[in-house]
Structure formats: structure tokens, C-alpha cells
Length: 293
Ligand code: SIN
Image (cartoon, rainbow, N blue to C red; front, side, top):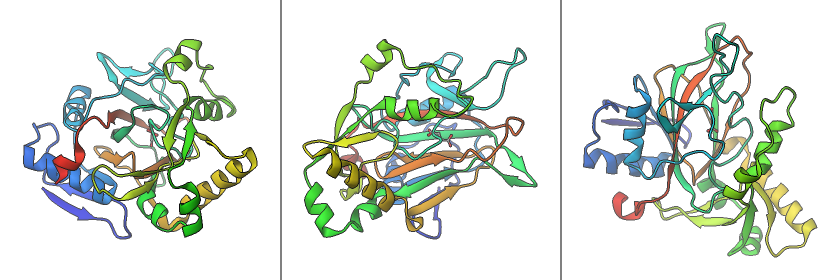
């Protein structure tokens, strides 16, 4: 297995490994360290069925069954299809607008996620260029660069994260196919409190864990200060210097750290430019510090 870091901080390319095969323990531990260190790992040239994607991911933690409970791969409720394609009856085969806005998956959940894993089967192309990049921002560096006064003001504080915030942002877009969340879905994912700074379980370094997709309010602060502070944090973390944009190639498996990055799916392709991606989300259920030591 070779790990080649990208220029500029975030991301690495992992070659010499077939993810369809059982992952050997030393490789698993090395990948865990690489995930913490680089944030985004790309395994090019893979060809996995939903079951193989799940098996690979399950080494890293419990697999999440998304509360939206839609567009799952047949027989695999833990695998979601992200796609703008339609079947012969004109019905969507996947969630067409997943992740189109900056966010961190599962920050809206009491139990958070360590990683997301996406496997590209079809990538939209125009004039020989891939479209539909997935972009990432580095929350280790965003934390480190915060002004000392902001770090002091926010140390030990928490923010409320709400699944419905992002859902409604997507629903408000013209032509959205999303129905409002049901009472049952809202009951299963109520707003939760998350620390604004947290220790990363693999690197042991602090990260800024507060994203514009789900964070709504800072607890114990006047509304005006909370709004101004969130606005500052969201602008601070979105600086170009923290950005890495992944241009997809069919066969890529992309695994990213869901604690130390935020991400955004770029919606720059049309309905006839087809994108088809399998996704699993991995909950942070293992002792990563011990495993990565
Ligand atoms: C996601 O936010 O999980 C989806 C990202 C993508 O489709 O690029």
C-alpha cells in the first residue's frame, strides 16, 4: 500500500490495495492514521458492490442507517444511492441533491460519525472535464488559526445542531423533491448539543466542530452574539487556504474524516449529466486513539 499526500495539506491517494479483499490489521491501522493525518483518502480504480463497500467500512465503526431511509441499495439499508439519474418509469434512483451545501455529516446526531465513504460508479463530464466535485475544508487548521480571543470565548461552549436545518435548506431550492421530515423522523433525530471545539480521536489535536449545515445557535449566549459568532466561524472556516476539491473519476472510493473536515457537493452539472455514487457513513464507535497508536 502506498500513501501519496496531495500538495497543499488536505488529502492523499492510496494505491496498491484492493478494497474488495479483507483488510489486514496493519493496513487498517495505517489507514486510520492516514485518515487522521490527511483528512481525505482517495482509493482509485476500485470496483465494489454495495456489500463489499459495507464490509470495508465496517472495520472502522458501526454503519449508520440514514434517518431519511430512502434510496438504499437493494438489501443494504446502510448504503445510500446518491444520483440524479431516473429509472425507466421516470422515477429518481437516488438522492439527487445530497450534501449540496457546507456541512459535517452526523453532527446533528448525539453519536457522531468518524467517516463517510463514497464510491463513484458514474461521474458527470463536460468537455472532457469531470463535474460534481466534492470539496473539503480542514477543521484542524481552522481551529489552530482562530484568534486567541475567539478561542477563549468559545472554550468549553456548545452549539445546537439540527438535522432539519440542512433538510429545509435543500427543500427551499426550486424543484426540490424532498418532502418535509415526518414527526417520526424529527423524533428520531432531535436537535442535539455538540462541543464547538473537540479533541480529534485519532490525532489528539483540537478541531473546530461547528458547521453551517447543522449548527443553529451557541448555547448560553445572547441571540445577537451567537448569530455574529456563528457567522464569523462559518466565514473563517471557508477560507480558500483550507480548501481541497476532489475531482471524481469512476472507480474512486473516497473516505473522509467527518470530525476534522466539512464538505460540500458541487452542483455544477445538469439533469442529463449523470452522477451515480454509493455512500456509507461510519459512526465513531471504536477506540481510535488506541487503534491508531
Ligand atoms: C454527502 O454530503 O455525503 C454527499 C457528497 C457528494 O455527493 O459529493
